[in-house]
Length: 345
Image (cartoon, rainbow, N blue to C red; front, side):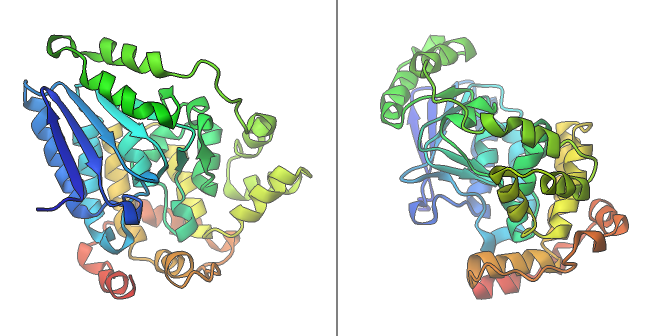
């Protein structure tokens, strides 16, 4: 029996626990497929009225397991589009620890997201020559969302609530009791209003202040520009330690990833969620075929020298034609260099 996902049935409630603590609950294609099957079954099962999703140890989920990346294009978009996003019954994600990349998507595309002081949220895909997927172009909103998408910035604790990525915030020590209260809602009283009432009772009234508030104006100003080059120029013009640190981090990232991500986030705001998933599928299949993704995986995850050699290596060498090609060309799964990943990881 596969124990990578633990499923508990308590009356009309279901608890899904991601269970790969040694890998910070990174998911593989089997887990994604299983999650989708469960949610689709429970969506039409009148005896199921509430779903709780959680991780264990230090993580909710660190995202997709790199070695199994070829399976994600088939399953992640299906899970989010047809299962999580469309799930009509209360769906509660308990985010205690790391929630990154697609792992964050498993939480924030649902109805209720509870974050704790131990929670860490980020979409760091561009750092490895990829792009923020799992619906990020919709849930990372505005100029601040673009800042997170391009830099992979990590939000911690109450900051996740402050920017709207969590519906509630509570202490990690309260989670067991909170879950018990959810599971104790009478069978004939399980609905959105009553679930929200339980969560509100555990929501901290005196939250730590938003740690990025002192830099909000700088972020809004720099990331409101109409190109990645303009963002870089804006950051260069600011003398603050914060903007200079952001600039330094930004210039380490794949120029192609930056430009494709920028265009994706700029255009995705006008897309329906279903259309967004279709675009993501094309982007995913293209990225995992190209040089920068494999070079990013090598430099950041395999050899860990943190010195990726991007191609092209300069923003000005990434033409609009190159960027557009990521959105219009369909890539066969047979073109994905899965052998490379399986041999290295």
